[in-house]
Amino acid sequence: MSLQKKPQMVEAVMFFNERGICKEMLYPEFEAMLDGVVNLPEFGDQQVRAAFVLINPRLLVKSVVCFYLDFGAKGEADRGWNIPLRHLAERGGSGPDLGVGPIRLACRSQCPVSWHQMHLWDPQLAPGHNDLLLIRDAAKRNNLGVLAEDETAQAAVQPAKLHMASEHKWYMQPDDLDLIRSSEDARKTERAEQEQRLKAAQLLKQQRLRITSLTQQHEEELARLRLQTAQREQALQERLATLEQALAEQTRRNDDLKTRLTAQAESFQQVRVEMDRQLHSLAHDGRSEIDGLRAQFEQEAQARINAALLESQERLARQDAQLASQSLLEAQLRAELAQLTAERDRLGREGGEQTLERLAAQGVVFVAYHPGAGHLTIPLQDIVVYQRNPMAYVAAKCFVSEAQYSQWLVHYQQPSCLAQLPSGNRCNMPIDRVESPSRFVSGESDCCARHRASVRQRNLGS
Image 1 (cartoon, rainbow, N blue to C red):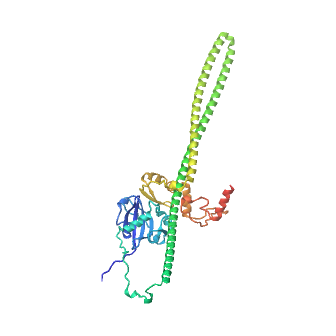
Image 2 (tube, rainbow, N blue to C red; image 1 turned 120 degrees about the vertical axis):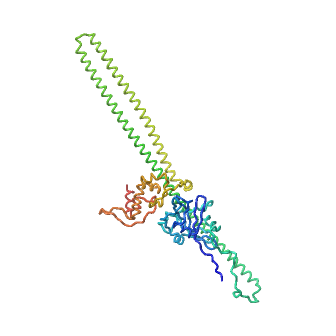
């Protein structure tokens, strides 16, 4: 008696690139790769999208888990990677129908275990590029050589289970035939209506999943644009403050110059008075000598006054030109600042479809883990910036400022109320943890319901 292998459920892992599915392997091969037995050099220094797929004997997909996997320089898998794929596949939410009813789907926007959410990704469900349909077609192609059932084979009926109807029932009466036809039509109608309801429900679930994914991408893109606008606005404010300080310094110098000119004019006037006095004292020495001395003095005094006035006028002309140039530059900066503010407001009102078209380029070289951002892929050109200030780099990746990220990190590590009681101690009431830094609001997210209400009342009163 020969033993025959029976088809059974198969676990597989499929890897994605920008063109679609680029590699498939059975789960035992995937485990060997995680243990370091096999490397994948084509994935060196990359963070790759992968999908854990459960395939039934009819080559139909039952469950899908979309996850990230990091590879080293030689294509070795991350040794610290530890995601319970089978548990997520069993606990995943309802997904679209890929031929055998709604699948179980675990992804970033539908994760049954919250602390694994940052390591998952959302599949694209666009009509022209649907990742789940690519998985379904790959399972049908059966490149992995899965042992499948023969759908054309039908179970043979044993003769003992066949029953012969009585002779008087061999021919149908007209009334019985009409009754059977009407009952069959009713069953067909009910079956068609049930199929339509199931299809509508599956389509509705698929659209809800797609809307959730698009909403999350839109929020991240909008937060990034708001952060960039705030940074540019802050830089312009700093530049404007510098120019205003330079203008104030120049104005002070002009005032000092005018004061010096006034002092010099007064000094010249005093010298002239003194010379007049000397001329009057020398009047008895002769009228001609007095006239000569007076003329000489007036010429010398007028020459000195003219030279000083000319130098002062030249300095004032240069200062006026500099002040006019700085005033023009200040007006241009204020106009640019107003334009950036209007652009920021317009970006906040833009729809999700225009924002989602702007995608960031990928170029991972180093990987670091930070709360709120997960495993960050750091390009080589960003290593110096990351080493200089890792907190600011991670905050920029989370689309928030460094101060907001620091406040969120304190809340994330110890989710308790930070409000101060009249006794001077902290409230320390346990509160719900905010998982995303971009959704954290200081004074509300880190306070309990009672102190959050008091903060709102204080803000409304101010």
